[in-house]
Image (cartoon, rainbow, N blue to C red; front, side):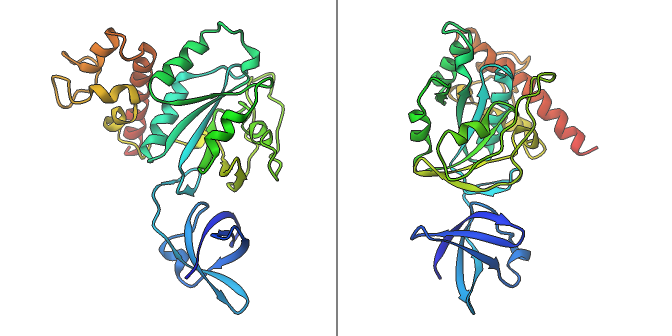
Length: 290
């Protein structure tokens, strides 16, 4: 049977893209939906049935997200603004932990850089992320989007990030064949309302991109707090070197992570964020079972 990828779902209608780049609609056949409901990003096998196309099989997924509901993602673009709303490194680190835990690579996209001065402390923060192995793309009205296009090439990407940072405006700059609704930021709150109402893959920069509901739908209920250390790039070289095997890098003696912070091998901000996020994740886990 031929193979295709689901790029859009509306009700029970699935838009497929086959290996010849042809788009067409299909329906799920028989008991398929009871076994595994197809989601955007899935690779499927399909057949013709009396003039209609039917999805017969959902192929194994390399990864998937529950909220937003999407599968086989290569990277997540964590979109943050320099100002309005203000850049939040703790939110970036929180999202990156969740994204890496799902088997997806995060890429940091920073918008509205035209609103800050060239010696703003934010640039030091971005340098720290780069030094930690994260790809960082800087975007502003006066900056070309070539770097962003190169990030998208050959990849399936999802967008996430704080509301009001300009995700929809960013996607619209790519000159795609779709228009995402954009809104003015509420001056009273300094934040924007979520404007994207469904998940759909759109061709962009030689790859595919999905605008998704944003960070507020991503939570910690499926994340083991004690595994968080594995999803922080700067921590990885020092894991397994603490005195205690179950070290959580809080108040334990002879902690390799804390020593690396003292030695300036791990940014203080990254460590402080870890402590805050670990506490948040632990509380979320405890609340889940109450």
